[in-house]
Image 1 (cartoon, rainbow, N blue to C red):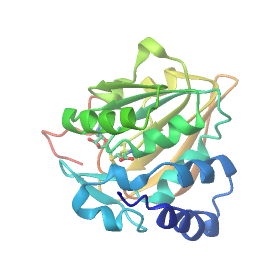
Image 2 (cartoon, rainbow, N blue to C red):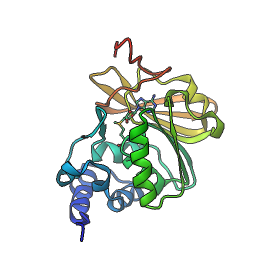
Image 3 (cartoon, rainbow, N blue to C red):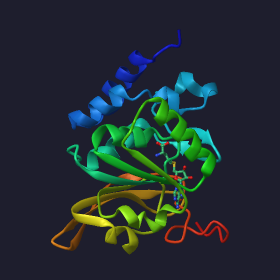
Image 4 (cartoon, helix red, strand yellow):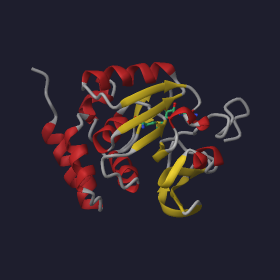
Length: 220
Ligand code: SAM
């Protein structure tokens, strides 16, 4: 029988999340439940729960558990929200969002990653996720507005395109900066005005697209 990694997962939640200040019980429960080991390449399954981002191929990464928990907590989800995610990647953050919200719309620019994520998330029987392959910096206007928007790649700025697709009272959680380091930022829309709060420094792969970095020019 395949090992289920429950001990590793619970230890990760306790030592890397709860002890470092993640308080939202729903986030801690979701991260205790979602089998992170299924979202990493089989060669590195034994280190799936370590305190670091890991390579998932295509020069992309699955984020460090603490960052996944922190970004999820920053969205302040109650369970009835519609959420847009830019950067499906492995699909791990998508699964956590599907545990926390009502419906998740996720966009990935690299089709092989999106296909891999869809396979795992269907196997885990999530029915509240819609996938798209394309440039997430354009958002997904057909389903807007969103109560939460989470960007899991480093952006040069908070684009107005995403702000326009955010509902009143909604929040965008996004790393903003250059290719070496970013600041994790929470943008809230209150009475049609934007409030920005800096959370902490972080490091993500670049958000590449029309309202992100330009891959060809490589100025990120
Ligand atoms: N959330 C992912 C996870 O849990 O595995 C980690 C995502 S990884 C740090 C960032 C992802 O953003 C990469 O898969 C990358 O291909 C994707 N990405 C970069 N620019 C994008 C864009 N404009 N639209 C959609 N996805 C993008």
